[in-house]
Length: 274
Image 1 (cartoon, one colour):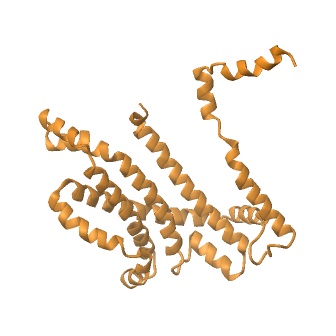
Image 2 (cartoon, helix red, strand yellow; image 1 turned 90 degrees about the horizontal axis):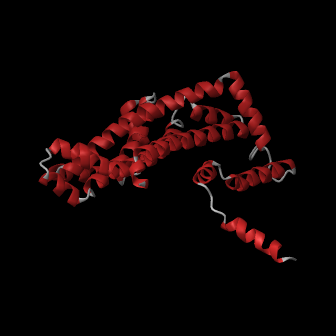
Image 3 (cartoon, helix red, strand yellow; image 1 turned 90 degrees about the vertical axis):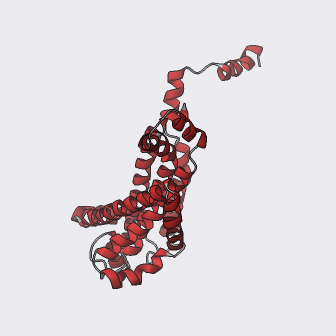
């Protein structure tokens, strides 16, 4: 082997990467992250084909895919999707408004902290899914208990993160705004709320995850429409393929909403990368 052959790789490794090339590489998706999920699906299919996994326990990926296409073709999946996302949207809006408002009141005011924080902490420690019987007694078995369950699950993570974000604002920044003659409103708008934004966005991601979890449980309560109804109905007929389709849609919706928040986070907190 010649000396020139030995030296070639060293030059290739040490060659500088231009900024456009580095940027292009960052944008390329890392396909290695798909290796393990695809391997799991392949093993799942093989287990079903060889009889290790009976269809009454779990249908094969191919059967699940065909069931999804069939449900999409008949419109059942689309209708269930609209109903479930509407429930989550209304419940999330109510819960987010309550959680953020209580977090701001408790975070900004000492008396607010004394009056708001103790009852919220008491309610937070309750297993809120255990409140379903009470919700049924209070709201009946219609849409209200499902939306109330989602709203309750959404409110606590947002409250905790907004409250923590406001309480942990750098005191030096507050002192600086006082020295500069900022009014209370200007301090709130220009310092406190922007400083609490990272925690608020973390709470938003947690709340969205809890919202979908609450919806799954809420739709088990006498639902006559939505993804939960689809899953319950499939259970009656031992259609594991339809059950998996419903669960996959739940998971896809959760991932999609999380991706939207992460996108908002990258844009809203662009200053952190500087």
